[in-house]
Length: 305
Image (cartoon, rainbow, N blue to C red):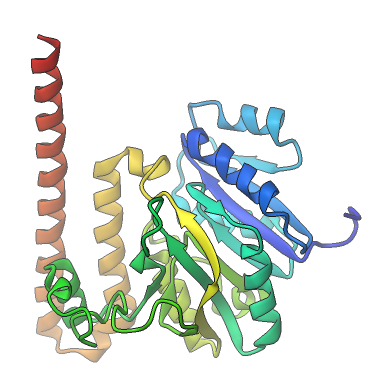
């Protein structure tokens, strides 16, 4: 690639103590042999596992931006996008594995659909099952309650109960959605220009839904394209290694999203109900983490004794 010519694609990644998944992710990128020209920018949030040094040694063509502390996923992603120059921008999680043609298909889709500003692929779990979080509906209070309570499992074909994960839609059919997953989200740089950067009030989690909704309000379409397929290991490395921070980030993002995009639609009283629901869900999440850790520690102690 000519150093003076901007690439077609800028791949922006955020790392935090996740070398065990980042290395195979970058290896899968090379093995997928994209036809589009690309650059990779990794913003490291003060990893202690040697990630920046290992990148310099094994993948010297990757540009690394080193933060002195963990500034969160959203701020770090903004850093990466600002430092990049491609006409297309890809958010890519470090715990993903690309397949041959996956990136080329997403780029082709945007090139052939000028009204589409954001597109996401079909995402699989390591066992090959479908990861429903790769396409999502608007998380209104009723839809969110159905999802958080588990009621969506009772009637996945219901547009209300299955409205967040869009389980009533065929998984192998392309179509417009409210949001795609930030684990692999391709956007035109013009979306960044018109919708603005990621909201740094959201530390991590939920920033993808927020940005997709803002892009839609700026006049862009958001689509799901199952012709592109990737694997998402999900929950390995990064903030997932800090479960209490993860629980806080998820629930903080819920409240920020409701306040920004939904509060004006509903009676003021409902805001209090939503806040209490989010707070209750957060407490329950923390309790599950605590119980799980103490159960594991106790089992390990018994095994050692």
